[in-house]
Image (cartoon, rainbow over all chains, first blue to last red; front, side):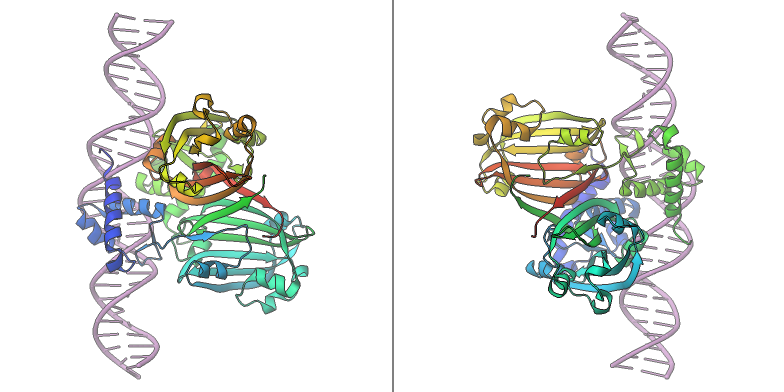
Length: 236
Length: 236
DNA sequence: GCAAACTTCTGGTCTATACCAATCAGCCAG
DNA sequence: CTGGCTGATTGGTATAGACCAGAAGTTTGC
């Protein structure tokens, strides 16, 4: 094979990680020892590590080092099962941190819901974890008339559950958009990753069964932490 | 701002590209002149370019240089409108190249369709273009009983159209899986991009209205060339 | 007039080295 | 035992220079 050295390195690292995952407890050795071990420079080593990062095998957090990525979370954005149920059903531990609660305008949400640009929303920003790893940040923009006093009540529970139980909203129609992205500096910081880390942006506009707008949802996921899965029946 | 220089560079390049897109006709100047212009090294410049690549603003092809990426294709993997219709409806020019026609086993397809591992399939591999840019490669694995002589007939047209018109199959149930990935060396080569380029892997298992397996589909897209969009109604 | 051969340009890869800032582990004082 | 300080470690960033192989453009030769 006349492949580039960093590609060979990628393969060697892959098997090395595979073999030593248990004893390393999820964290790779430091870059300098690793580079020395393979008789190369950190630059080339990092190129190889970045490959594995792109595949979703490893990731880095802050400046703390390289970590082995857990299995992807299987996620169906078309269903309204709550995040918590989802994660637990896959034998993982969910957690949510509320970052912000405020009332504000947000033209992108307004447009997606067919409302005027100056429409105010109740804005909830939260960060979600799986097994103590932050995997996404999201902003929820809820139409105030549909859920009065939401901001006073909300404390991290399932929003869709709340909408259903307290205000009797059934989320019937939704329009979903998914785009790969590079995380913005803000999103990256809130997820403790480097700016520009690969991410997946999922936006949802949700209406009730009478086509009334309920909420707009902007999610920013780490690219390696989810596997989108949709089951459909009926001809389309 | 105390940001890293390469992040400032990213911003400067962004505006530079924005202003000169027309006169450059989609192709950026070579790396060396660009690096000199910003009084830095190619290494740092490439770091900035890679950021913009991650955002989907620019891409590179082969060793020919950096190019400005066109708008993303809006794509609904749950509908069975053909690729050609799709692309044309968005004012773009579709094209398909057939890379391979053969009969072979493929355990992943078999498993997804609930068939034994040694089940043979009719395998079609094709590359698809939008406005002469290769944006995806895909492998289709069709159950032979459902479409006899497919390999003799097939010449690049819409497969789903063929299945419907010639064999009367209505594709009723499907299970779709989407995962971000790094393109494999093979996929990367067929798309004329560097190995490990960011991609999006979309797999579909498709059944008819009697739950009989029809085909399995593995698509590998360039990450910057599509925007997934799904419209749903009815509670789920 | 056209195809083959050659040259130049360009991105892809790699080495060696250096400095900074965040992190972490260990020490020390209260 | 706790909280703050400190120094070593580590990832992130950057410079400077080099070589290779593929792509593109130009010249040559029939």
